[in-house]
Length: 249
Length: 222
Image (tube, rainbow over all chains, first blue to last red; front, side, top):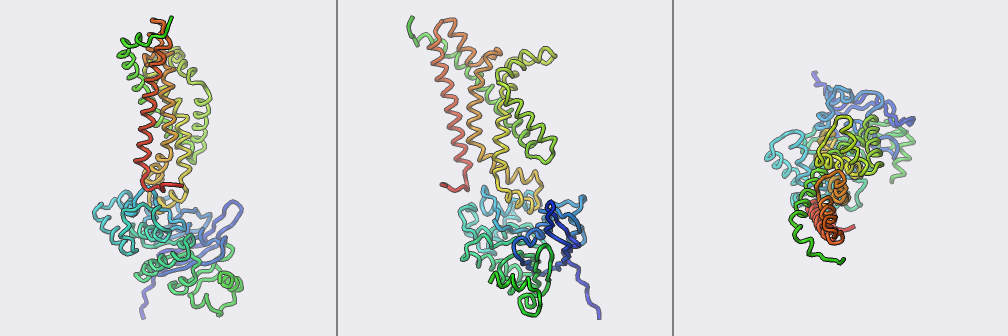
């Protein structure tokens, strides 16, 4: 029987990250395969955001290797600006550009960085706005939008670069509870369309429903990396995970 | 002796001509201050210590020595070592480099006031540091620096009156010349004051206008 060996799209080998004397990530190994949704959970300070930010080099790892497909990301020779075009990122605080309209926010990078023709980019931007349900707000400025709306625009902005992987850094943590749903809805749609996603979140419902794998981080280690069924069940004896899940209810 | 404003009237065309020179000197000096100020500000926020030191040195030195002394150095001092400027160029350079030390701090402050997440978001979209500065950081920072910049422009225009001592034939120079010839100081100084005020008030209004134009997307109230 011939089985095609799937190559991971992101490969993390022995990743270490220190802030001064504080070791935030310890010997992290992680493979992410195309089309997978990997959710990273853990208490604050466990290193999950740092891990995500190392993937696109917003943090520079202290040791170890990160590969995107077969290119090593964290070397001097790598053009990090090229790598980042393949890795869309969504932030907790949205970080939309307040001096640009919604449409301009989405178009600025495809036009000025990727050098794609304006008409084509606009077409794509309008499709993405349709997808996140924000078409009507295309000419508004970000600060006039609710947090949930801003985050949906931020997702569209990241998607406009046609990334291979989307990184989500606690995308709903800054939102009022009633606005969380609309953002998760968009993320679910993305997952269903086959986007590779790495999601740091406290939304256990989302992890349970959408994730292919859940990584539980504790004290700088990935202490568990398994299916959501397994992670959210009693079939393991990881006390830290049990108490973490109990505490966040 | 009495106050007789009519004595000024026949000199008004000459005063306006001198005011034109004041405007020219000021505009050029402001341009110099913006360009030099931006460079010094970038030095200051760069991660290279040597550039930071150069920026610190520039700001402290230039800001710490009176403008009058600097104008003297440029116009009367430098020729001794073979560097000569005419009064106009010396005025523009003196005023411009002096104002640049303040403008640099204005730019630095407003660049650093932009939340770091803006830079991160721009970089995460694949923008280089300079592209992110151009598209994301500077447009926001410049908007925030407009009010203090406006102040600095007004100060620079008023400072140009000091250039009278290095023989630049600007408004203050002409004013004092005509005033002493006619022995009518109050009259000429009064008229000069009005002309200065009209110029600074115009700058102030222009800056307000630009602020309004650039304030798109901002919350209207706090």
